[in-house]
Image (cartoon, rainbow, N blue to C red; front, top):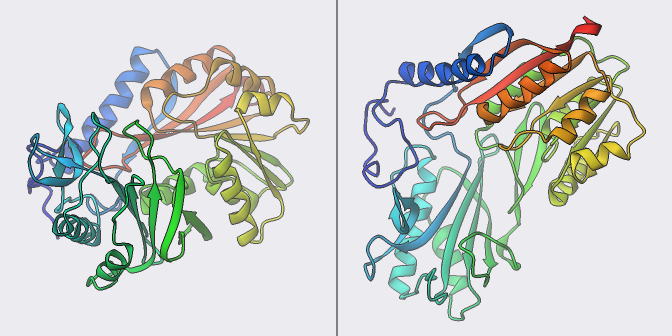
Length: 391
């Protein structure tokens, strides 16, 4: 069992965990204080400000990591891991990271050793030459499945068969269900899939959350901390008075976890999401779970709602970090629903949206923060809003 005061060996250079050595109790106070301070600064009237919900675990909670190949010092030995603090071009090997299951660290170290022994080069951000770009590891927390995806340029010479054999020979707690290779020759230092090749197994893993099963493909968005987000979603859905006979809208729905949870109780659930791939995954997963009373629509939330004839009885929103645009907020407000549940991953944009909603008659009935990402600055929040006229 890790000690919360035990400093990670990578902390000097890796900027992933800003609260290294800070007691967990103090971390929670800081995050709760940040949310409270933002509410007060924006003069948001909050009926009930509930205590922050601690994460089920402070360590080994991330189910996905995206590592980068590079070097720590120019011309030095190849590394694989995270960008160095204040030196973006430098990469720190993080083979003892505390936020991931030990199997991630084993796969990272084995991949780096394999590539060093083979003499492969990493992709240089300035010269745009080289082979190795990223390593993405994903796991099913409830299913024990592991998906490994190596991202390279199309430069020839990589021994795919030997790489698969090496990975399958590792002593891991999880079961590797797929080894993939993604080809990317784009200049930008970002993961992009120009071509995906399945070297062994399948191109997805399975996960279970909220009593539902999800097929998560190589590049699908999925909640990073499964156990913590299950607590958050259960709480958020539980805030709604009564689903019977109601139509529920889940806006910015991602792969539709909340939408499907709503569909289990409501007459009908409609999910709206900008990313088309996420919508396709949501539809497939709804079919997998035998839910025929939910619909998923791809497109900008405002534009989709403008062309939608259905009227919701309740609305759940879970926007990206930039929050909800004024146009989309206006459309949401125009429905005049009694209850809106707002799930936020960014308290700064949340309070801006709450201020807007407050002006148009919605009261913040309750607010509760969730610490889904211990040791980092990130904090999630769930807000129940109720319209004055409908109370």
